[in-house]
Structure formats: C-alpha cells, structure tokens
Image (cartoon, rainbow, N blue to C red; front, side, top):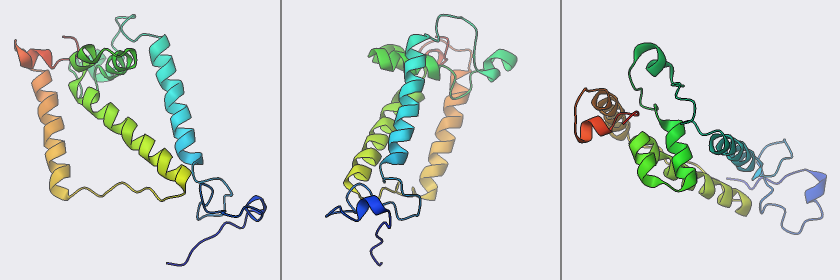
Length: 162
C-alpha cells in the first residue's frame, strides 16, 4: 500500500509529518482529533452523571421501566456509571452488572484508540467471529429475562432496583 502524506501546509516544515498528524483524508485534521473529541464528549457526559446523581430523583429514566415496568438490558446504567465514577464497584455491579463489566472495557478501548492515534498508527477493532456475536446476543437476552424474573437470591439481584 503506498504511503499517504498530508498535503496540509503546516506539515511541510515538519521533519516527521506522519506521526500523530496523518489522517489519510483531505480534512487536514490530526489523526488524534476524533478520539479526543469522543473523549471530551464522554468526559462531559460523565461529569453530568457525576454531578446530577441519577439516584436522587427516584423517577425511572428508562422507557421500558416507566411504561412496561420491566428492566431493559441498560436499566440502571446511569446509576452504574455514577457508582463507577465514584469508585464504588459493588454498587455499580448491583445496578447493572452488564454495564459494570462493559464500561471499563470500553474505556480501555478508547484509551488504546487515543494512544495509537497520537502515535500515528491505525486503529481498527478486530472483527468478532459470527458465533461470538450470537453468544453475546443470547447472553444479553438471557440477562434481560433473568433480571425481570420475580425471584429471590442472586437472580433477583440482577434487577436494576435491587
């Protein structure tokens, strides 16, 4: 594959124009622009979730909880995020175990994306095999069903209002 160089005038005097700036398109934006913008948006959202504690109102934000009285797979996600931001992993797991596991993984993936972009490297998520997508879909459906069962013990704990 031929090497692509930016034609942006600011990179002409740079002895190593590809490191951290090469985008491969004509936008002229540095490669790290997209992950930095995503990170800024997520940081702002996390700041709002931290400042306005979702547990304070008592009003369910999720439409499936408000209208149908059932927990969707993401019910408790805002409270889980708030608990993770405060460092309370046990409370995060109590609100939504699926989100409590997924959010740190997503944060690490974002950090790798930002790091590789600053270095000037490409970042592509690996394509998961079809069977893994099926297993994940079945796991999310099973989680949704289990958290809505009227049961005691650990299954009852899966509900967002436990």
